[in-house]
Length: 547
Ligand code: ATP
Ligand code: MG
Image 1 (spheres, rainbow, N blue to C red):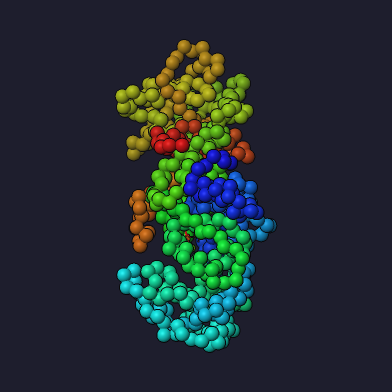
Image 2: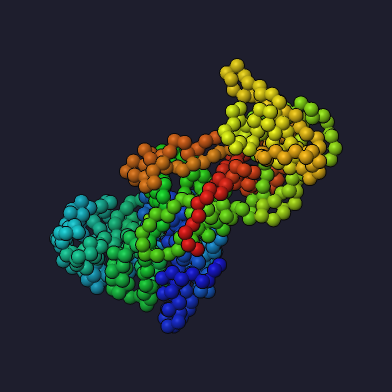
């Protein structure tokens, strides 16, 4: 991990450490709500929280913010744990922590606020509360229940907890300032009634604490030294501080905000992704087109690529939308060094070598199994029937064509030069076969033919190559900034193109998961058998700015 990062958060931590205000080491947390799968935006927060703790010798809690039983589930908890671990990070303790583990403490702090005259039970309807809280320009009005006595409040709050009331009949509110210029401070709701089964606490509770009340207390209880969150919480910071200042707790973490990651050509919200999954617009949360961690993993991204992406985008306070090309660039750069190269034909055109003596003609052909470095080699079965890429042949080639054409020659990668003698079409005029002659003296490595064809094309041997479904992914959305109110309308119907191709035998039998298919891109074995996913195309000329 590079320790030379200089963003404002790391600089602040360096200052705190230098001043001695952080005595027992840096402690951070990543606090997802288990209401969906994590996306690449979360990866930014994960890399930041776990990253700074690693760099400064501290530790990080993975804490689930599970205060809304209607939306949360164990499936999401497990998926989030898997994703954080896969990204390469270890949280404090064997198991993560949960806001729900602190429900008892949270409840006691709520009673403490009531006893101190700092919270009251409000019996307005949700709608009425919304209206009386005012707007950005209109101050709120005090609730008619604001002056209930401590005893009355305690009694009502206990009855709320005991299940006496239905959802929505009462809420507990902080008694701060109904007319505050900051809407979040206008007597915010601290607790609400929800008769719902919680994924961890079952039916123990029927009142649930709100995020703003819960989060700061959990941070304090866990001794978080730097509570890093995204900018939309900046206006909540006074409330974060108010709660901790008004209860008996001996720790007060600072909340520090940074900007959310936005990415072009996608949205970035669990809530929106749920609709894509539930409405069947994608194969699931791990659809390789989804910008979820699970989707990127299935697509073929390695954690190294995602961490590098997060390093490059950095941490600032300015909102921006990062280009999708940067993410693709990071994948490509990582795969260049790690994915061995093999041959696959995506859109096959049959080639018959009319002069090739079938049966074993001698030593087998070899191809190096290299990425950047040599990684050994594999044999390349060869016979009189091969496949090449359909678009490596042109009946009427454009100028400067370097591939195959009628009466033209081309080299087959690691093998022989072939010359096209005859083009066979079916009744509809579609080319179905090329009849070619191979040049026996042109074998790669011992070429004595003296021929110098301009092009080299990839190929596979028809007898031994393995039929493979190859999924070519484009962007899930066709708009740079998809409209969130009608997501389905922004989907690109051509974001998945399935091609029925062939991969060479050695790749099909290899334990490797990722390959560079010569000339076509980087590919990953899918969880569906017999399927490969295109992770990313080969170099596209795009370059990142600085760094
Ligand atoms: P979503 O709308 O996708 O559910 P969220 O912010 O509600 O996002 P949480 O589960 O509450 O999701 O997020 C956990 C942590 O991840 C929070 O600290 C949040 O600030 C951070 N986070 C979420 N989205 C992004 C993003 N796009 N960029 C950076 N950090 C993010
Ligand atoms: Mg949320």
